[in-house]
Structure formats: structure tokens, C-alpha cells
Amino acid sequence: MSVEPIAENSSTQPDVEKFFANAVRRIPKFLLLISALVLLPVAWFFSVQVAGGFAAGALVSWFNFRALARGVEALGDRIVEQHSRERGHVIVMRFLLRYLLVAAIGYVIFVSSLGAFRGFLFGVCAPVAAMLMEAAYEGYRALRRGY
Image 1 (cartoon, rainbow, N blue to C red):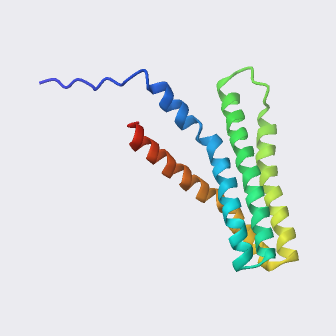
Image 2: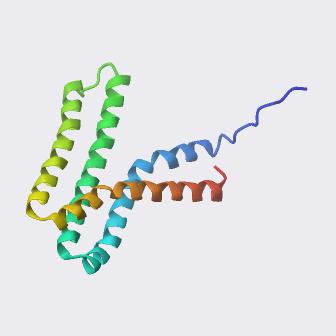
Image 3: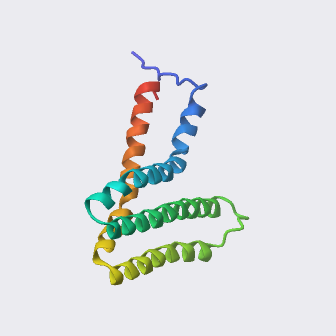
């Protein structure tokens, strides 16, 4: 008794790959959407300072995520392509500078206002919510389309 593998539908396979590859583009959009939806309730229930810290944290997170995506792509190109224009030490330096930027902004906010710093910390964690939103969207699409 032999078991034959199920033939995959080759016509939908590129669409599936394109859909999942676009997750890196959708996550920053989800991050901005979540931040915009949460900003006014944070200002209303906590304070304008906390909301300002949240906005700063969300903005830093958005920038950080986009820079991370570009850095990973550049590092992948550097590894795969022998004649890549990207230099290894430049990629690593950009990686470290991102975290120095987050630390510097966090320090300035911490020194100025503890409430704003708490909001900043929640804003820095906003990409987690965006990734959860992306996972829910991918699950919905997978069930709906049969991926």
C-alpha cells in the first residue's frame, strides 16, 4: 500500500507566498493603527503626559521595526550575494545605533517625567500587539482562503 503525496495547487502557491511575505509591510501599518486607536483613551484615562510618552514610544517602535526589517534584508543580501554593496560592519553599526537611539530617548523621557516614561514603555511594547493582530489576520485569511 503506497501513499501518494497530495499535489499542491501550483496556481495558488505564489499568492500564498506573496501574502505571507507581505507581513513585514503590514505589521508597521497595524502598529500605527493600534497607536492611533489607543492614544486618545490613554490621554483621557491617564494623562496627556502618559499619552505623549506612549506616542513617542510607538513612533520609536515603528522606526525601530522598519529599520530592523531593512537590516535583516541587507544582512540576508550580504550573506547570499557575494558582490553585495552592503558592508557587514555598517549593518552591525546600524543595528547597534537603533538600540542606542531607543535608550537615549527613553532616558530623556525618564528624566523629564515618570508618567511619560511609563507611557513610553507601553508604546515600545506596541509592536507586540501589532504582531498579534497580524497573526490573527493571517489565521483568518488562512481559514477563509484555505492556505
